[in-house]
Image 1: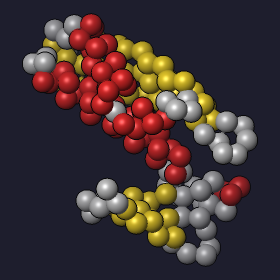
Image 2 (image 1 turned 90 degrees about the vertical axis):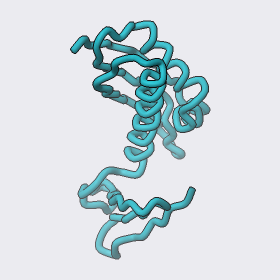
Image 3 (image 1 turned 135 degrees about the vertical axis):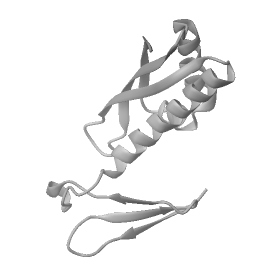
Length: 140
């Protein structure tokens, strides 16, 4: 896996990132750090990437189990250390999974498998952050 990060110029703290698969993402800093608040912060990208990683796992696990999953949303809330390096110290992930006849136990198992075995992002972040989860199943 590879990517390239390119500073967009001396008048701010915006960066473009090109992934190895050819996708572009923009990142920016907060105004108090020289940014212009035009795009997500790099640490927000870490958090949203983790949410995407675990959501991908949960949907895939449920589909492979032949469950009728129709939607999956993950809301993440994180706290960071007060001093440098400002690593994540706590992350809570709330999963809202929609489907037809989805057993709560199957969704909880999918979330647990993601966090214990498959989601490399959340497993990596668990080295510095206490990660908690909650699950909500919505019948559609």
